[in-house]
Image (cartoon, rainbow over all chains, first blue to last red; front, side):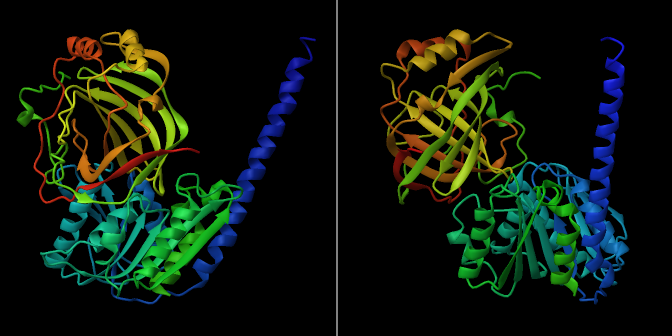
Length: 260
Length: 213
């Protein structure tokens, strides 16, 4: 009996390895098919800076890979990362330019678990872009809590100089308190895209419910905001809450909404 | 790290500002009823001496009106931190987090009375400077009805994070006995943060109902 055991383990190992290779191959194929619409497109220059705002407990990997992919696909030629420390100090790396073709800014919050403080830091960042770099128009793309920060920014009456928001993408997010009083302040000129994920057989993306995402879209629409909805349905590889910002189908949708 | 000094609260690290907790809840605006339903019981599996209170870490699922929240921990403040027309002896905080990281605290204000058996269990299991495995169901500390005050505030201990949705429930069916209060205060003499500036924040007052699944 003892002699036969290593042979069984040998076959088990081979089976597991084959399954892993198959899964990796499937993932690669899925990625390639999903990427096709992105590579095939030509993106026009809209002269608007797009700011990516990550969610709760996020880091540079939330939007860093996405903005790099957008650069590789020639949707932009200016990618800047702005890290904001817990005390509000900004460290700017990358292009450090806010002109050129569709400049993108990936924001990284050091204290990414303090949404009210992050909203204040986002407001200060946009004020800085407006006054120091003459950025007059921006798009906001928020994932999860980053979407709620953007919503709070958009529904606050600012007394300082701020850029005009042209488009807003909310993805993988939902309201966690009654938005009624804030919605009346949401600027009606902001074109909005709401993106959600639904894992096959689940009620949402394993973090945010599909009902919550749909409610987000419906509430904005009811408030007179031009809003569209996109739901990605699939396996956790693409539809899980934190996979949505690494998903080529969603990349394509974002690029189409912003630049096509 | 030294424990928080409740006698010198001005020295607490606080990089925030305008939306701090606790606050005086005596000026309010009338609002609709809030219904809270415990979808999965609040089960505490760790009882922790965190130097300023007893913290009960665990899990559970709660629906408040339209939003679902994950229960993550509970702790007690003696005396109560929030101020209503009634001066309460103690205040439970049931801390919840949403799927996208938002925080909400369901606070239950406790008058003096007969006391709840679960409070005796909490006190019996406590071991100073340590963390103990426990199995306590805490939703028995939630009243069937009461008055709820809703507002936007912060955590009441550092990091004093703002953006916290508060549901402060004033009620009379969940109580703490004088003996239980005394036992707690022998461990933690005073752990209430003083009232913070309201800064024109609206406070909504409505009826509270505990729903059933």
